[in-house]
Image (tube, rainbow, N blue to C red; front, side):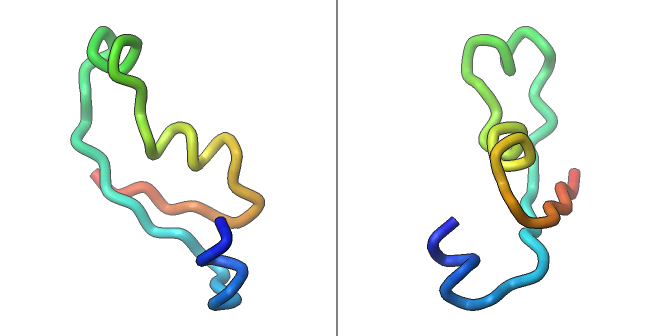
Length: 46
């Protein structure tokens, strides 16, 4: 999030691999974590 505030960005754009629910449980999802913890708007593209 330091990069976002450094560049004064309004939106974070991320891609996702579209993991299955089981894979997400074991591997986790970076995009899900960012959406949950970001103080900025996040657009996730599949």
